Image 1 (cartoon, rainbow, N blue to C red):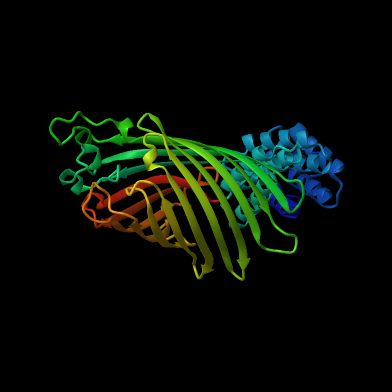
Image 2: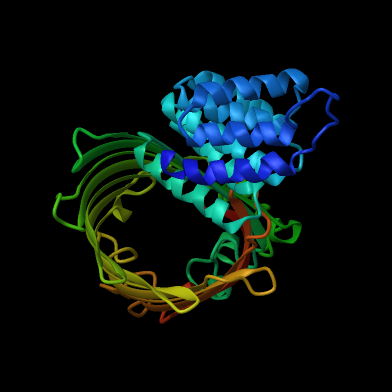
Amino acid sequence: MRAFRPLLLAVLTWLAFAAPVVSQDAGARISRADAREFAITLLRNREPLAAREIAIGLLRADVKDVAALNILGQAELALGRVEAAEAAGREAFRLAGDEDLQRFTAAFTVAEALSRQGKLTAAQLWLRRAGEATGDERLENAAKQVYRGVEAANPWRITGSLSLMPSSNVNNGSEEAAFGLLTSAAALPLEGWSLNTSATVERTFRPDASHEYTIGVSARDRRVFLTTEAKNSPMLGLPPLENDDFSSSAASLSFGTRFQPADSKAIYQVRATASRDWRGGGAYLNSYNLLSARSWVQGRQRRNVSLSYTRQNRLDSDNLSANIWTVRGGLSFPVENGSIAFDAQLSDTTSSSPLVAHTSISAGTSYGLNEPIFGLQPTLSARLTHRDYDDISPLFLERRVDTEVSLGVDFAAPGISVLGFIPTVGVTAMRNSSTVAAYQTEQIGLSFGYRSSF
């Protein structure tokens, strides 16, 4: 953060003259604006003690002098009095009102004070406040750059997501299910919406500059809400459907390590994860995953490859348990006015059930614009997936082969920001064509959520 001290002092210099100047006594020999500028000059000349005394003098005359509070905060930081700097910054932020630059300087001061106290997560929050406070792109980018540095140094990492998704087919059902052997109202396409939440907490240990070890816990939840029409079964003799029949949740525990050789741009990662899924109100699946990955930068491209093994133990029917091997690769690179990403994936699923055992290949791409159009920043995406099932199931008369196509567009509104989180709205369309009619599905859905701009 100290690298941005000259930038903060430049802001303070401007504020020294922009701040309101009250009338002076007839015998006054220096105006308040001149006193502020002199204090900032002292800070530049590494005389924080003298600058502090001037700031205190200004505050004796006016305890609501926000510029003086910001000067005091910077002086206290230079003197190593981080708790006093934090207090001055918090008070300046409280009194700054709608004065963007004052709020930015105050929030930045508090963030640096908290960072020096080792309170890195709180420092990240105040850096988000600093970025939100200013409309100056240079200052906002400074807050984001410092945020990334604090985030990298923070041994704790907390992430979360929240989205609301109306859908024409919230259960991924098929119109053909009513005429197949899997006749069930729950297998038909049902309208509704889902509320999706997730949270992850990770603790990282860094014994040296090249290695880090991470332990994490995470939880996710999907609450499904069917429309009244969808709940009332269209099939005679069947009871109404319940929201809980389609809701699900999961919890997981993970251990991982990352290694980056000192003379290399490549990062190597190994992670083991154990999780349990619940569906329809009961335990549904235990899953164990082992992932090995490598990511690196080559020119302007970011590349990654990974190999993973997953063991899925179905608790409702052991016959449906599976072993899954997956190979994945991806790359992304900037282009004029945006960025492009590609990925491809090949997986092999073995199981004693012909309903589960299959191989699949998938490829996807996305293109995001850097600059908003009419205030919205779009990202376009497309994915093609082909699944080939190993054997003919006794339930069907032919071998199942699926081809799934999905298209999506996501819009972010960077002009609407709350602590660096911006709202998003997306539209997705998916169609799965299958040789087995009961698995032919299509879906159009909306999503409302948020993403971080930091």
